[in-house]
Length: 227
Image 1 (cartoon, rainbow, N blue to C red):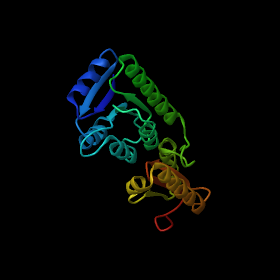
Image 2: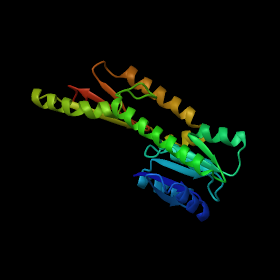
Image 3: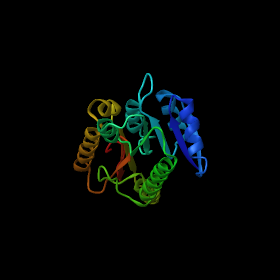
Image 4: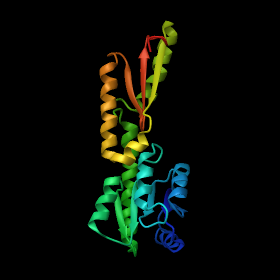
């Protein structure tokens, strides 16, 4: 069964969601605030997160931003739970990376339909990611391509007694960029970094986006000093 994480400070809402989704093939987990929700999301890797907007200490918008800034949780679909239905709040949530909204009190059929839709979107995204070799954001090779070619390059290097080097690069303080300027700006930063890697590397080098703000470069026939 697929996993649903409810991040809401109301035990009544948590219980209500469990009842409303009881006929679905899902397991519902709950967290009471943003901090515990982030921890639970990293540990459980749920298929969909239902996130309350109005929570004490750290509201749903801030929690959503944290989830989308973390490479482990950034691809999990988020449905906001809100008692308000203002257009401004909906736009703000969608711009932060949420996929949908459900307004309290829930209509059972609507909640089920929106959860099913997000689960279907999650499944299709994972399927496409497994099939694709190109990172959609940067245009570089992706982790799937790296995994498929690394063993081949290692085998070739050993057979020919040639060196093979690997560069791992992690963008410092990337979360603060997303928090300060927004995810669209963060995406543009990643695209520009990818462009720099592509322009600086040789034609035979393999430049990949490893995940999140991490990049990898495989350098065939290159010793450590050359890397």
